[in-house]
Length: 628
Image (cartoon, rainbow, N blue to C red; front, side, top):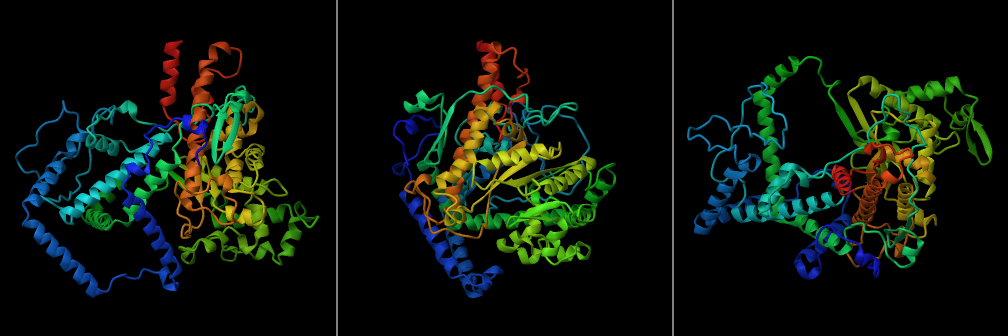
């Protein structure tokens, strides 16, 4: 996978790992787990759709007796008593991590009926305003030790979960994604480090257009930078010019190397198979669920009275964001049915499709399907995902075909068809209008990019601009279906590397040469991220590791595993974010030399980010201003 020279010079934001520094048994355990899952997948039958107890009552009783004997033996151990006392001290001191040392006071010796509410430091709440809170009844769990498992299991589970959190924080920071502040504080305290607010990464969106600003203005694109982009083995390299490319000297953009990623993946797989960790997590989740049920029993009426006394707020006018909705399913079934009937009544003679070289009107399309829209009902439309679609991706996917007809799906729910996706855009705009009228609801609909051709991005951007689909209540997520195997079997793609190139190269080109790609440059202002979608129940026979074929050599018709997709998508997105950050800094650094252009002085006008980039850009800009 390594490329001499160039790849070695590209920086990393965390130390590289190798197999000699990591326990070999972790990797072996991960491979055994994966093999076990594959064997179980082959032996599954119809009963696997339902919840069936794995152990018989006798086995459960024996396991419980063994656990009891182990607990009794631990109680008689002096070492166990010391460890329990240590755990108790850690729990009692945990609250102090969230309280500034200068404001902290020792707790009162008098017993309190309920635990005190934590007071967050000023960094958490810049302005503290006193307000009344309802007198809820609180549930307090007391005792020296209340983990619910043996001390050995508790200690092992804690270490494993901390390792998983550290891995998660590492990759979140690398891609400029937000990581929970409280969790980060605890992880810093465990490593004897001091947590600082300025180290936190903040997400940032492109600011919405002003009231009188045109959201489809193509004339404010920055000048081209004329960089050169080239993908090798699924990893993009950006060069200042062709001469630098010939010298194999790419720009400095950090990325996660493959060996470190696969070793971290092995840790996570081993954690999934770890018995003590699974037991502790299962018990902990059951405990929290029971605690919440108890809270509902004690405080249901108090919460209900509080809601009643709160003016101008109910379920329909609190601020909500739907972060997982397909654009093809953003309208409800009644809305889709009403729209189909309306188009048939108002424009039956409009040419809307072409089949075998013959153009067809809307009326002819329905006649070829032997149906009359007047007879359609919500039930016959059959686009509602019900109980029969649970854990059935095939049935769930078929719900995107109204009346089970792919012709209607192509006509009403696609951005690329004979009428340029007009019907789909009109429905999306109607949904957006309802969101704007409701004032408090926002969505992130998903649009698909398949990777069949690099023109998909341009076509999608043109659809967005031509039909004016922008809404202040909508941002867009790009979903990439994991269907390389289908494209390869039909000889649409020569390799997996070509699929990655079709997905990401247009984004890099629009970033470095926005004047040559004005439509895509504009559309990316309203895109917030990526999603990888497919049937989650499917398993692959390939164990992803640093010895896996690189994407340029993956030419078989077999689909790469989920982890393979995620790594190369993560690398490309992370490099793209870093490049866009450098471009913004470069543009502002060069502003004194470019006073006559249309860039303006608003940082958000240039920050048309594909994903989150954060306030780190502002910090860089301030540093450049000070230095110049």
